Image 1 (cartoon, one colour):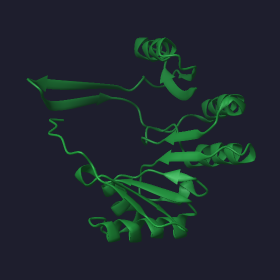
Image 2 (cartoon, one colour):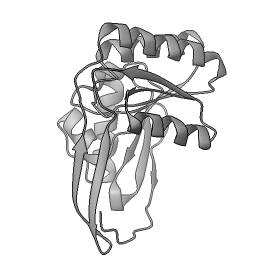
Image 3 (cartoon, one colour):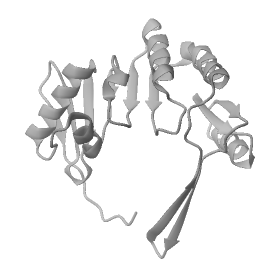
Image 4 (tube, one colour):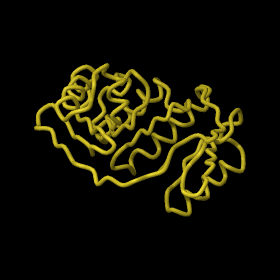
Length: 196
């Protein structure tokens, strides 16, 4: 089940159709005051040269936030887990994040967060948070180059933000899973050449 906001436009209708085609139940809030985000990639050969984004990133108006939260509440009994994928596009405001987290916790649903921004305390109570290396460094003000660096930065997030487990993605260095009570697990990557 995907709960999200789209514009009243052909791109929004396309999103709904593609989700349905994939067997994903689209629970979409239609925002008349914004367009559906569209990302256009300009490619030459196999290399991406440029990406142009058309979007509105202001917060949803209160009525739309309430409609979104109602859709989340209706979907909650069918969910095994709640995933918040935050792209800073105006849908997951601080208030919306807190309310969704409270709804999930009240129903005993684990919460996984793909975070954005500098202040991860807004995700307090999350079971898993999945920052990349740069996001981990930005949120903690610490370097995250070595396994020990990543563990120290992740532990800072765990203790300062009330998060249970950090799964840090580290590009060519793989990923690290760090929790308060267990030894960290560092998983290497299989490096491939990519162009975008």
